[in-house]
Amino acid sequence: MKVTRFTALASCMMLLAGCMLGPNYKRPELDLPTGEAADHFSIFTNVKWWEVFEDPVLNQLEADALAYNKDLQAAAARVDQARAAVGIAKADQMPSITAAAESGRAGNNEGSGQTQSTAGLSASFELDLWGKYRRLSEAARAQLLASESSRDTVRLTLTADVANNYFTLLMLDEQLLIAQRTLKARQENVRIYESRYKNGYSTEVDLKRVEANMSSVQAQERQIQLKITQTETALSVLVGKSPREIVENNVPRGKNITEVTLIPDVPENLPSDLLARRPDVRSAEGQLIAANANIGAARASYFPSIPLTASAGYASGALDSLFMGPSGVWALGGQVLAPIFEGGKIRAQNKKAEAEYQEMLASYEKTVQGAFKEAYDALAANRLSREIFESYKQQTAAMQRSYDLTKKQEDAGLIGVTDLLDVEENLLSAEMNLASARNDELAAVVNLSKALGGGWNAEGGFGPYEELVKKQQAELKK
Image (tube, rainbow, N blue to C red; front, top):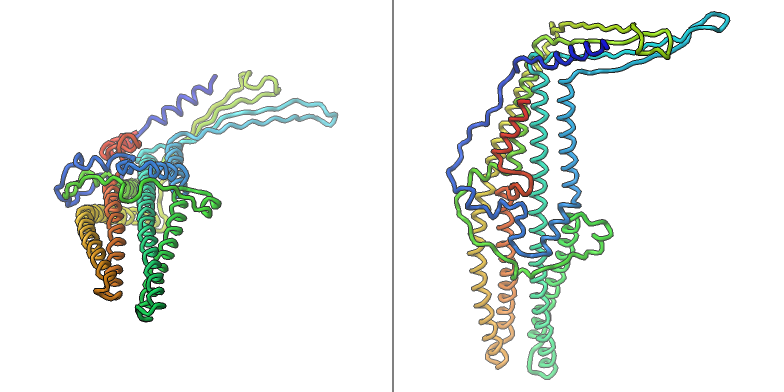
């Protein structure tokens, strides 16, 4: 069949290749500090880094969030879009082949006639001599890398938000217990001073002071209950619960906040090689690679394009002899299309592509700056929050002892109720601060894991960043 001659010719055209215009991508040189090796921070590279807290309820909440969170589902859909765009870009480098067939009957005024049928294949293909379509394919692959990294950023932010909200909920539970315990003690104080007032052993001023103190704690308890409700609904949204489940507000609890495992301290120096793996840094570099490739595609517009067309088909006088007779024909044609005058459009497109690269370069450098700032702040918070917790722990112990002694003096009539209320207020504040400081300790670990780009090892399918870049570069050469 002569169609094979057309097919062979089209295949040869696909093998033709020329140079690619535009600069090849090279990672920008950055002034990075010399820090610890990533091995010292291995605890944060585990894709399920939240398991270090050893709370099964938190583990389940994280699993639900990864399965049902809407923002993560949208990010995954954007990855699918980018992957499809790569397929479209690759298809632009392949011949376009179409088939057509037509059948009819012609005759005289007596109604007799003969069936007329035609069928054929046609193909069009543009020689990519200047690498325009290869650059566009390179840009599409880079956008895919950026999209995958953006999805990983959403994933990392989501898991960190789930952990932080969960620990906040545990802190509020602890503070609610403190408030309820304190309120019970204040209600007992009111009962005692009401009895004293009725029997003439206390003044109305003392009674009203005790009642006001009780009301203050009662209001504080209500405020904590409101915060618990708000945190529960926020956590429900993060884990992808339905509107009915959100309204029901049935968020499970695991350990209390004092029982959650706290990891050992980590080195203070920044791991530069680890920060390069952060998904937001990967995403910014993917955008930079794409912008760099688009410069080459824009420059190719200056040069002529060479489209080729080919056709092969058969014509038959009878429908039953279609593709069987000796009437096969084929044809090949080509033309050169060179830009002559487009009113400065091509030059403007080149300037636009170069300006977009400069924008992406600035965005990439800013992202790296932000990565080191966040990591530095997180390392400092991880160290200092532990010291702050120890200080509040000592303060709470001292205030508890002070309250016990003051209460005995007040019961013995050696001091007035005002002195006791002052000590009670200070003790309540110290206990609340201690619970908050414990939450800050846990949040510091979460934020440090987020700042270091936790979750990029082989288990999660991410892999070290250098391997990703090598793989991407190999794909770009295809």
